[in-house]
Image 1 (tube, rainbow, N blue to C red):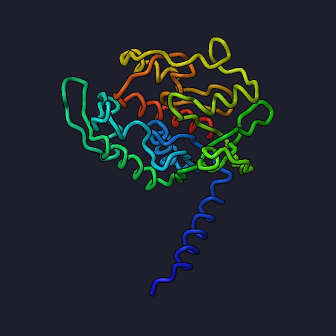
Image 2 (spheres, one colour; image 1 turned 90 degrees about the horizontal axis):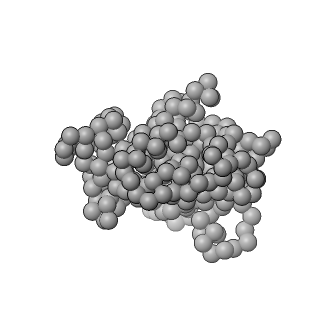
Image 3 (cartoon, rainbow, N blue to C red; image 1 turned 60 degrees about the vertical axis):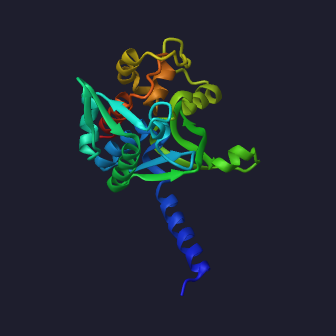
Length: 257
């Protein structure tokens, strides 16, 4: 016989235990798009404690819709190796162009992250950063519903050795650090340079160059990296996103050692 109260108790007790475990982690990733998921997977694979925070109900970012809601995505050969590792099917289109089902790609990324040990929390927004001695060392969190309703509800915090901004075009975490802490970024002006118009060839190259520590304790990957460093966007080719997340993970793993 099912008891509604026991169902509620199960959910509340389990969620509480899960949340308490991620209040002090190696890496906190903000944004559950392709670069954030890729970064989380490779960090977890290296046995690091990871929490990934997504403000929306679902992870996946813009990958769900492919190009203009045609739910297919394109990756290049180097990025295809990541999808192969995650056992996500691809098939060739032309030389160095591979297609994948957008839905399978998102679901596969999320599943492999969870299996590797990533703790994913949806419907949570990072509204601020913790900064100590001019270094980003954590996040200030609230429910996305609180943010959307503009309610006066105080947040909670988590501590992390490194924070990764994978929030896409908006580069939200970097913007907060720049605005509130007056931190000088590792850009030509010390400020966010802003995203430029679409140019896939350039964007897919610069995204790896731009994936780096933008100020002490804070990394950028995916479109957030190109937005911060003033490079173009690339549209529905997602190889650079996946490779960017992997690069950020690799650099952080080296520093954590």
